[in-house]
Image (cartoon, rainbow, N blue to C red; front, side, top):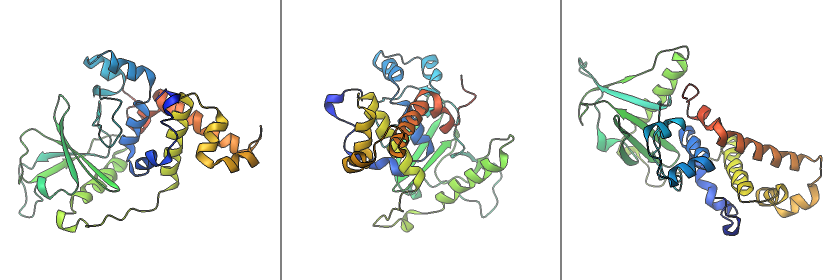
Length: 254
């Protein structure tokens, strides 16, 4: 990502997938761009203590973007649904039905437990499966206690609702919603970060993000366009150098 000759930051189309990433996936996108993280990976520093300093249980290949990577964060994001067998289920209890969860599924063992990620256009469900949970069993989900219990419950309930959508309801043609302003911000931030790490000037970054014509007419020392580009670059560096921990909810992780 630091080889300007490759111009890997130029095609905007290469970043369109970012528009549909959830927050934990965005955290990975910023972490994987950190030069020191990439160096640890290349040095085969796969020890647990090395991974933990980055907020991971295991190091993940930084060449994989969020569509193919499966980073095991050291603590679960609120969006991760923790499922356990229901020891005393009521008659109408919902069962864990692996094959009825919509989307492309990935099972990963992070060294501690089995996790399941189910992706489909515009949605990603992340499950942490308790030992002993089997297909067809009645399940309960856990919410971590604390000051933010209400927010955590709402996040978990939203993920639980996603599981209610069975495969029969999954549309043949996926219709994606219009990108939100925050999604566009993340895409442009990653573009700007890659560009500066590849050696591009602020003006070159501006031309790529907003067009050569806009830059030619509006690029001034105290102009709004130049300030926007500068803020994007600053934001990208901040998220790469530790800010990703906030996205992954790892503030207390060393």
